[in-house]
Image (cartoon, rainbow, N blue to C red):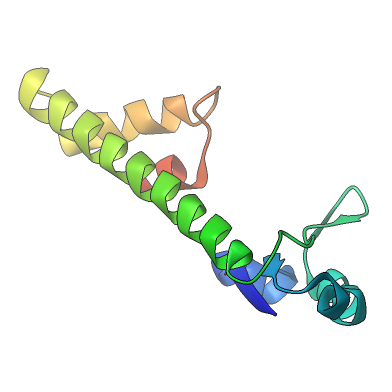
Length: 113
């Protein structure tokens, strides 16, 4: 069984999201342990068998690609606000903090603000 793991520092302390891939028979044995140590949302473990060998790592790779795209968008928004609008770093931080109060709320915008 190979598994993608997500959650950063908080996941290390409170339980990560686990994306295991491999033979279903192996997950039947190992799954209960992985589900126990994973994060839980509304009592449901953040762990499920993803598919055959490599599937869990593939899902983690896609997750990382989405995260890197978000980081690029944040960088471009910063550049546009600085160079296009003329905002100072402090003003941009205020914009990002405001964005983080609504639909754009995300960990990446939070740590940028």
